[in-house]
Length: 265
Image (cartoon, rainbow, N blue to C red; front, side):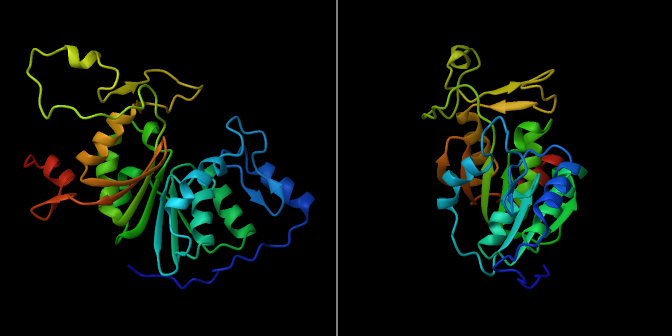
């Protein structure tokens, strides 16, 4: 992988007049990430409060403060909040990807305004494994439950993780994770009525006025899927976020997804 020089270890914000900055922020459409762009908030009335900063405050202690020499892939970068935070910690290369042009335009503007040298690219999570090389940190935040094929996407994301995966998803249902048997007999139907049993809730129409909310796991299901993809959970800094390391993402030198697709899993 070609590594870009870290031209902006200490970001230097641009000097855009506040009135002009406010106007340009508004012209970029509704923001989901509430960023502070030189004193102007992009989503001050967000229904989740100061989002995603409220979540970042809980997650950030689990991520090194100094990321010099580190490469970062931010999947579903939205308005660029997490990409910017990783760059502020000195990451050498940060690549943010999304499929929404509005979010990408917002992210590019935010990074430029804050003086952060970040790459942004329009790319689906289902094509993430086509990006050359691997990354020291892969951020997969707030995307999983928006996917019709979530585990398929996770198995593609795994291919890009050289070091650490920072994973976050909406959780509904039980937040309890307990030990289960490794197998159950065919006629045991009772286990599926246990609220702690791993489960995914399918949203046929819409949830929270968002038709892209497709699959929402409970906590046990999410941890089970992370394990199934060959990841080891090393930290759980808040109820929707896991810090993971690849441990058994390949079998006999091949990725689980590739074995699944050619019928050898």
